[in-house]
Length: 230
Image (cartoon, rainbow, N blue to C red; front, top):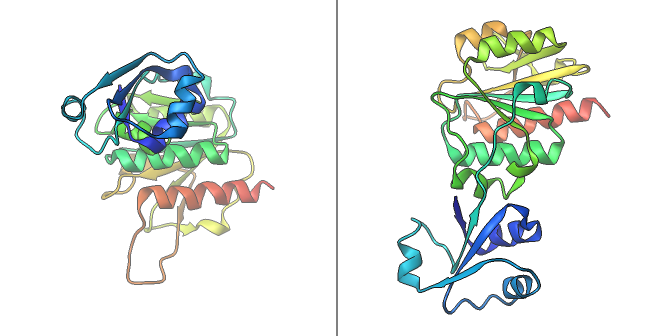
């Protein structure tokens, strides 16, 4: 998997265990990155700009990293966690990457995504997460409602998010084992998933905007849970 750009490269080169190869443009001159490369044993390939341009569709800034593919975890790997996030068919890789980064920063125990109609781990997701995905347990499941039922059997309370038939997110008790469900960017959480929730929370809107970006809503909800546990 290829990722590119100086900033994301610096993040990955600090913890190089997931880097297979570094690809540099022949006139690359970033002194900080060159110093990192000189002090490590990375496999480095040097190409001309036009050769690199053919490898990716984006501004590579003269550096690419060939990184290891992400390995999804099993549901059993996160059942002992206290806070899990379920993403109900998120389609934008930038949203997924941003949510992963927030989850890792907040100490979320795992993220669950469906296998169908949901963006998986792509180079854009890895880049947007700034590498945080490799420190995050990401689980793919076939059926969200079946998975929620299993999570309930292991003591989790399920908190969905919706503007309709819902409670102000600040009025919900987040003690105990919690699963937060974040819905699709356009449609929100699906009907069956919503019916499976123990609570449905809403983030009040005070302006003319009637909804928030999925990654922004995730951040607000996640840190409300964290705040309530301090």
